[in-house]
Each structure stands twice: as C-alpha cells, then as structure tokens.
Length: 578
Image 1 (spheres, rainbow, N blue to C red):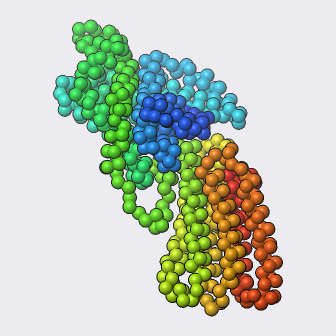
Image 2: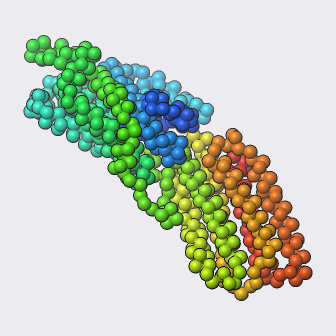
Image 3: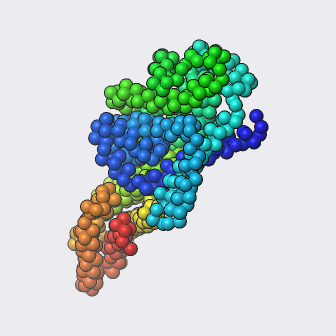
C-alpha cells in the first residue's frame, strides 16, 4: 500500500468529518432557536421526549448538539433529568441516519452530486440572506465527495484480495467470544482517539464492503464506537455541574447496557439483520468466485447501517420503561457537590467541555446571566438587612455588632463574586463570538455583554451602599432620624421592585414582558430622589439632623437611583433597545 493511498484515505476521512461538522452547524444556525423551543415544548412524557430527540438529532445530524441543548434545559429547570434521558435515547436513534447516508455513499457513486452542490452553495454563501443554506450545501457536498473518494480508495486498495490483510483478520477466531470483545474495545479506542464515530464507521464500511473484514467483527467495531462516543461526552462533562454529569452518565449507561444484552444474542441478531438486507452470511469466496463474493460484500455497508438502527431502536424500546430507575441510578452514582452557595462563585451553566456548538452556547450564557441577576437581587436584600441592623439603639448595638460585621463580610464576598462572574461570562461570550455565527446570535451576544457589565455595576452600587452604612455604623456620626429610615426603606422597596421586574424579564420570554412597568418604577425612583433631595436641604437648615448625617443619607438615596438606572440598562439590552 503506497504512502499516497494512506494520505488519500486520511484526507478523505478529514474531509468527511469537516463536511459533517459544517452541515451540522449550518442546520443549527438555520433552526437553532426553533429547535430549543421544540425541545422545551415537546417533552411532556418519555415517548414524546424520545421522539423529539430523534427528530432534532436527525435534523441537525449531531447527537452532541441535542445532548448539549438537553443538558442546558435541565440546568435551567425547563426539563427534568428523566425527560432529558428520554431525549438522549431519541438522539441515539436520530444519529443512525448518518450511517444510512454513509452506506448510500459507499454503495453508489454519488460524487457527481457534489459538484452542483458546491456550485449552488458558493453562490448562496455570497448572498447574505441564504448563506446558511449555502453552508449546509457545502457541508453535504464535502460529505458526498469524501464518501466517493473513500469508496474509490477502498476499491483501489483491493483489501479483499490483499493476502496480508486477509491473514491478519483470519488470525482472529471468528467463533470466539474473545474476538468480539477485542474488536469491541478496538472500536471504542479508535472512536475516542479520532473523536468521530462517523470516521470510524467509514473505515469499518470500507473494510467490510471490500470483503476483508468479516461482518461479525465489523459489527463489534460499531458497538465499540457506540461506547467510545459516550466516553468523550463523559470526559467533557467532568468539568460540568452535577446534572450535566448525570445526563452524560445516563447516555453511557444506555449504550453499555445495549452492548451487554446484544452480546448474549450476538450471532442470531446479526443473522436476522443480514436476512433483512439480503446478505448471505455463509457465502464462501472459494465456492462462488471473487465477483459474486464481492457483490455480496458490497451489501455490508447497509448491514452495518441496519444493525446500528435496529440496535438503538430495540435498546430504546427496552430501556424507555425504566427511565425512573436509570434516573435513580445516575443520581446515586453522582452525588451533588456540597458547596456553600456563598463561597461558590464558579459558573453553574457554562461548561468549557460542553461548548461544542456556538449557537447553543448562547442558551447556557443566558442561564448564567439569569443566575447572576438573581444573585445581585439577593445582594441588595442583604444591604437592606444591613441598614435595619444599623438602626439599632446603642444598647443593642454591642450585641448585634457580630451580626452586622458578618453580614457586611458576606456582601463584600458577593462583590468579589460579581466581579468574577462578569469576567468569566464575558470571556466565554467572547470565545463564542469568534465562531461563525448568525447575525441574530451576534446581536444577542452584544446585548449579553452589555447585560453582564450593567449587572456588575449593580453589585458595585450595592457594595458602595454597604460601605456607606458600615462607615456610619462604626463612625461617630449621629443616627439617622426615624423619618430618614422610613424614606430609605421606601426608596429601597422601589429599587427592589425594579430588580424583581428585571429578574422576571431574564427568566421569561421578552414578548410577554411589560417594559412600561420598569420605566414607571424608574420615574418613581427619580421623582422620589428629587423630592428627598429638596427635603434634605430644608431639614438640615432646620437643624433636624447634622449636615454630615444628611450627606450620608443622600449618598444612599443617590446610590439607589444609580442602581435603578443600571436595572433599566439591563432591561433595555435584553429587549433589544439602545
């Protein structure tokens, strides 16, 4: 075998993987938001969940994309883990469509179809409106072209007539259970190394359809691919949160369980699939001649695709009844990490290992921003509590000093958390924005970068208030008078209402959000601030309290008003207003 043949084989496999990736990403760009809505709406029970997983994966040609979306929904509380498991089962069925596309490409010369697809694709790519359809056509053209080269290379290699190759595979006893296990492990390792079950499936199809690799060993390789692809997702999930790791483990459990039961009925099951396709398992080359033998072997790519589909369908049919038990099992294996929520400033939804598809990463970032926003309202709640503690009489002050200092330290810690969250989410969004994205998604990312910046400003405003309250509490100034406390609490109540409105928007759909309510609260805050400013000057002139106390009091009022402005900026960014 010449070095050029090896390079042709490797190059066409690379082209195949690139074509699959381009096609999948283009489909996700065309249908990303709609797919998310379909996943959220159609998973009412285990059967619709399974059907949804099948359809979405068949549509985007990527079980990884479906798994990522599903995990994001579990994190967001839109799907339960049980529903996610049913979607992942469906994704395993949907991904078998790839094997059928490849078997068709291996069996027929379809290279002539790739040229018009390239030509039409390049025209559409330069037309902004249709560029994703162009990307999709380019992806599928690369896929078809790669399959045609693989088919031609496979034929030119004459593997079925290469004695060294035949002797190598003949050295494994076809009736031995150990042989099946060896090829199963080999399939898993190969898939894990090349990170693409499609590439390993293509190699298996070349070996089988050339007559070099017996069907039983070929199918053992396919079973290994099924496990190898889940090892990748489990490693990716190691850096993720508890629910993501559970979903990845459920995926692995599904495939490993399937492989275990198929090993018990290995030969009868394969013989049944071969019967459907019309492949003669017992045909001997010496008896029928090389031509008839190779014509029979050419059907093997369809046998592999048929096995892949029937294996996943039967496995799903068995396990779909045991989803609650699978859920209990993965929850028992992967316990939630016991981390103090205050100490934990790691991101919950964004996981580096799972950033496979930029279009879908936006959903994870949105959930992270939602969590950030809720945290800022909790921080503001602590500031209100701090103000209440600071209003204690001198007799109570000593006994409450510990509580006051502890609460102030928590607010200080939250300030650090808000800085970290802004930085990490912004870095993540910048890494996503480097990819080839739809205009819609680019606009979303710009808006989200503005949102995180404004949320961090809310954290700064809360900390500024806490420092002002602490300075007054520990200083020699007089207490606020009762009406000042009343006004501060009233102003903080208005500010908290505006924060609640912001969180309502970030948690729900912007179509159903009434933005006028936010603007009305903002106007109330501004008017109240102006009213208190005038009254403060009068009260200081009337010697109701000192100028120093009045200054601290107005600092808190002004900080609340600033915080309200940041809230409006977040709402405008999310609503797409400038």
